[in-house]
Image (tube, rainbow, N blue to C red):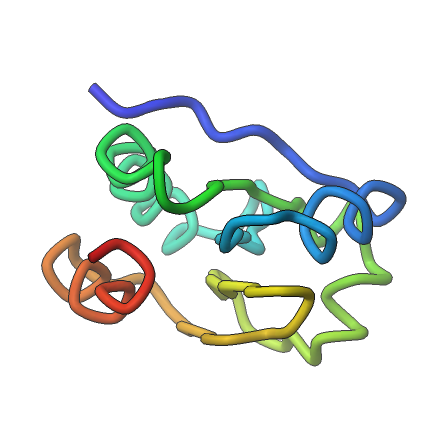
Length: 109
């Protein structure tokens, strides 16, 4: 079973994500988004396997409109990885675990 991912808000984003000393994955999602619900358990599984190298967080775009707008998140799910305060990777759409692992291999290896 995966690890529950903590939520991050617009107010906490700067301190929690951009100032983190390790890479941070943020899953931008919404309650009404079917593909978001598909990808959520996969990300929780990955969090359980790779949380030593990567911090896994999720952000509800309906409750936190500022950050997604700042990073031009127009479709969800969008999975962004931030390294040293910079956007290092953006994955848009639900993908199977193998595809996500491949996309994230730079951060989990």
